[in-house]
Amino acid sequence: MKLLKRIKSFLFINNTTKLLFLEAYLFLAWARFIKSKKFSKVASFLGTQMGETTLSLDKANYKVLRDISQSVHIMSKYTFWESMCLVRAIAAMKMLERRNIESTIYLGTAKDEAGKLIAHAWTRSGPFYITGAEEMDRFVIVSKFAKRIERK
Image (cartoon, rainbow, N blue to C red; front, side, top):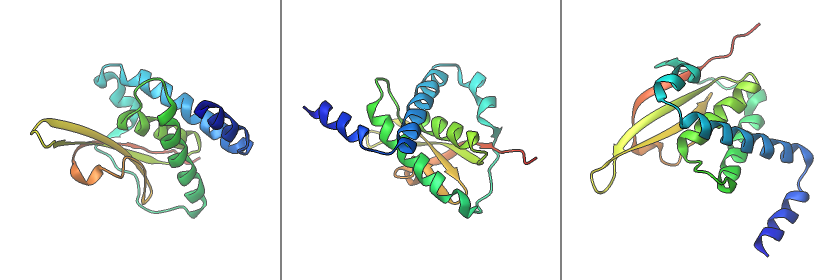
């Protein structure tokens, strides 16, 4: 019954949102595949290591940033694979890149309550955090990757 309700809800949303959800789902799948590779091979693909993109906001991008953030967050709940922070961060970065919007992925570490080392990833574009913002304050940044867009 729950599945039918979800399908019905999906059918009643507009086509633009449906396409954005589909794109997010596909990039989450692709990012999960990328995550399974050795990080040394993936790192160069993520952008300039230890670089950072600008904090200034292009107001024309505000709605796009919000929509991508929401679509990645929503669709990550419906994947058949693990779509945690790094997968979400990479998917959001690629969706932004397709729209010629710069972004930075941050990788951080912290210790949990038991003293074990844990990791987290999040994505920022301009002044907005697209993924992972809810937990980022607990983590110390150990690396970051800037995906700059060349202006023509």
